[in-house]
Length: 153
Image (cartoon, rainbow, N blue to C red; front, side, top):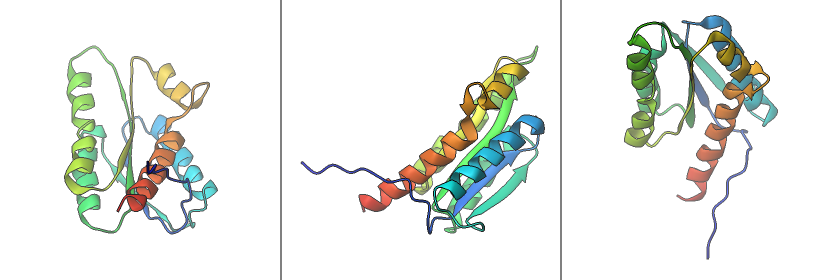
C-alpha cells in the first residue's frame, strides 16, 4: 500500500492571505498568526502576500481571483463573523464558507480561518487567546495540503 503524507516545509511555497477588515482587531491577530506560521515553517519573508477586503462576504471572490492567477500554491481565508441580533450573521458566514468551492473549482488549497462565533470574546480566544490561533492553524493546513497535492501528482 502506498501512503501519502505531506511535510510542513513552506520553503518555496507562495501563500496568499485574504483577510477581512471588519472586526480587524481580531482578524489582525489571525493574520499575524498565519504569517508567523509560514515563516516558522521555512517560508521566505516575501512568500506571503496579503489582500485586505472589506468584510468576510468579499473573501470568496478575491480568493477565487487569486487562485485563478496561478501565482499561489495555497490560500488562507481569514475573517471574523460574530453573531449579532439579526440574520445577517448567517448570510455572511454562509457566503464566507464558499471558499471551499474556490478550492474545489481551481485545485488551489484554501484553508478557512474565518471565525464564526457567538461573541467577541470567543473570537479573541481563537485569535491567539486560550484556544490558540486559528490563523496559524489554517496556514499550517494550507502548507500541508499544498505539499500533499505535490506528492500525489
